[in-house]
Image (cartoon, each protein chain N blue to C red):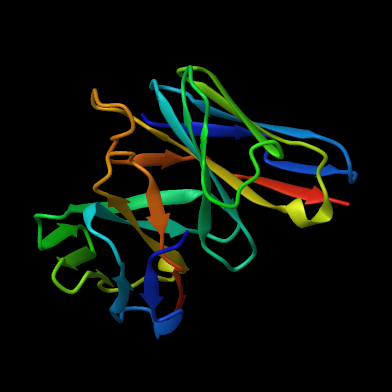
Length: 120
Length: 112
């Protein structure tokens, strides 16, 4: 159990286009999902916390109008990179918490396989 | 923001040897977790240690936590070539948000 999927796994787009990445918890409900970005040979940087039914909470320095997050159901969160530019090229990873009753206080996060975004 | 520092940044050992990675953090934590990431892949959760625990074992993994020094170590015993990966520590703070803050990671190469 506790499988998280991401789609697509890899996307190449032209500069100026928008790209949507989906994150799904396949066999559990996750009221909280997290989005990370990882540049080559670097660690994961938390971008935002996505709570089902409410607005996402963005980390300092992350543009909320650039990275639109929607968490419409207990099993799906989407990240849309709007008007993508080459500097947005990165590995985007989501994770989901299997909550134990308290919002945002899951102990273990289950990670998706990541989405490699390349903006030409 | 990244609060964890990991040491060493890179480690190369022979199969069968033990590998030790260290992690330091800055703020109070609820728990600390270790993850593995194979190149270009997602993360695999290895082990979680809570702030009131000092040591935890899982198979060939041993994790220690010293909250007074704000540090943790991950020991992989009898390493295998398949253990080659990047290893990250990540902390969950006491603010009840569940956010994971990752360290910079250690790249481990185990030579057959």
